[in-house]
Image 1 (cartoon, rainbow, N blue to C red):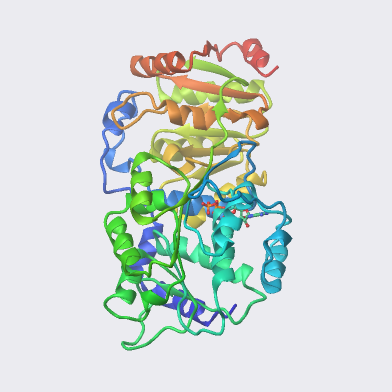
Image 2: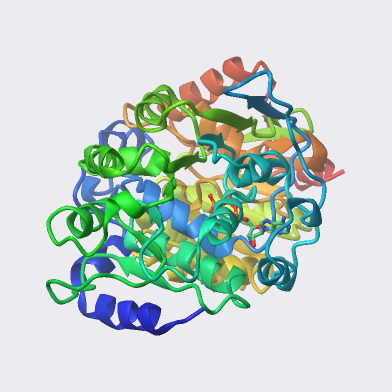
Length: 479
Ligand SMILES: Nc1ncnc2c1ncn2[C@@H]1O[C@H](COP(=O)(O)OP(=O)(O)OP(=O)(O)O)[C@@H](O)[C@H]1O
């Protein structure tokens, strides 16, 4: 894969402060109510401006950066074929797909031995003749990107020096991640070239692109097709809309994507991918993908069945810290994750724990996504034994190897109500990884006691009281 255009794009983006700033989580803009209702009621009294804003694109990027392997699930793939009478193909090996030898070589060089669950069904559909449209949904890390990259590379005619595949991603950084997969998989296919349609990659007027694959953000792709005419949309054979759920969360992207799609020929293959599938994504998908086949892979359900849950009564954050020290003094904890409501508490707690001699990692809102990925990587490798974090930073992160989760602050939503889903994600385990776990909740006010009670009711699972001044009692919970 030729890298000139890629290198050029990287140079240019470094100058493009605007796109780079997407990397930084925009946390100071919003002032959600949670800080007032939740944290203050919990005695934190910290400034609301520190509340962190969820950024789907950053979260998705973080997931990509920290993911090195396929997520395997035991759930079955659900397939809805456009033409129920045509035979349903699925493949168990890459050979069955009759890929170009250069691509098969690329796939194996990436260490892929066999298709992932979603790839088993999606690849035959995407590589079929005539091309079929597809809407595919499965959680992050199940092999969607690798699948559509392979489809794009397979459909390209390297002798034709014009754009034939168009892939739109929600942000520059996400586009770059997909670009890297194209580079890797196309390593033995150097005739195929790639260009980034991103703000900051300024081409001379009148230029006609020669690269066969264009990957970019909706606004720039639209400009390149419509206003600047670098791309002839009528010659596009494959259109990919990646991360549809993240896409629709950004204002304007939905309309821009639809406008791009309308310029494409009827014969163009249209593919849409999403990690989640709420109503809004579904409506968008149906608008943009005509006559689709649909593939869905359910997420593995998390449960609290194998988790021992406790709560500790305290009056202040200092008391909570003291309780935490007692717990650490009484039981051996290999690795723990501690969740705080605000960055400020997380920073304070990490400092206190370090002073006590713990090796602490802090995942904090002001860090850039790459820095966060590095912190998580170190923690995963066991370099630190405690990870202190706020919820926003850690959403969606695998905590499989962590056996103890401490809610230094209980999870509440922006209105101060219990956030049951987050509670489950923090401490739950999927059936298959059903290792026993321990969860300890710190309660420091009537408000947080109420939150705890409601969580208890919601899951219909008892959360036992723990007296952290009684070392014998703490020892018992570890058994
Ligand atoms: N068939 C396979 N065999 C082994 N590893 C694979 C296979 N397909 C993909 N992977 C690897 O698994 C990881 C996740 O794959 P991929 O990025 O394609 O998933 P995804 O569903 O697109 O996730 P995301 O939405 O986070 O990008 C990557 O490290 C990728 O290299």
